[in-house]
Length: 238
Ligand SMILES: [Zn+2]
Image (cartoon, rainbow, N blue to C red; front, side):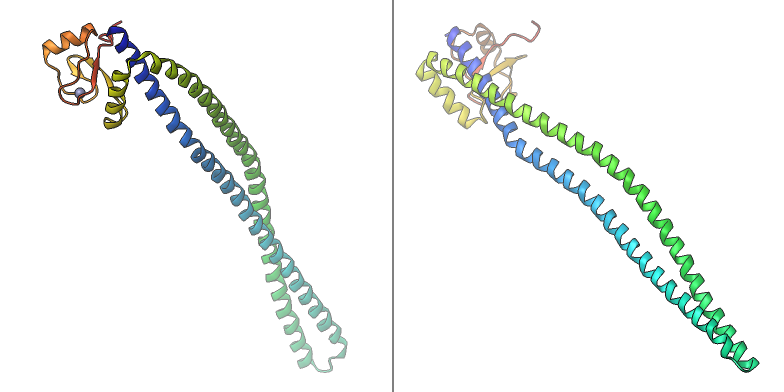
């Protein structure tokens, strides 16, 4: 029985490991998706800044066209200087020219402001693009790590399945069946260790006499509370 219990204990540990590997495997696509999303967000941020920059460039060109129009207006008005006949007409033309110049100078100021904004944004964009390169490298490295873990998980899985195959052949079929039934009913745990007179499956105390017997690993003893097969793994001191 001692040997059988030992084999069963090993099987239980392998089954728990397999469960962990399976759960981890299910996480990989989610982790990969998260990385994709992170990358998309980085790209979007840059894209938005580029669009903003384009808009500002467009505004600058529009304002420059406006400014040219105002300059043309000034030239035309100045051309009319030779045609004025009265002082009144002359004064009116001068104030007309002043008004146009006023508009032109406001446009110039706006253009300077837009150009400042463009400079600022370009600097920001260059910085962001540099950061993005670094971020993308990090994302790529994380992707690689996940892929390595996937490969490692597959290898572990294969190895443990092979060992499991051997164990299931060595364990008596009655015991194996009992283990499977318990495992199914008790969250994947059919055999459990006892520590400090406590079942480590349900954390309920086992009677002292039972605890002594469990420590011998000589008989099939089951937890009076959760029904799991009890196993003495040592007291954790060695
Ligand atoms: Zn129990």
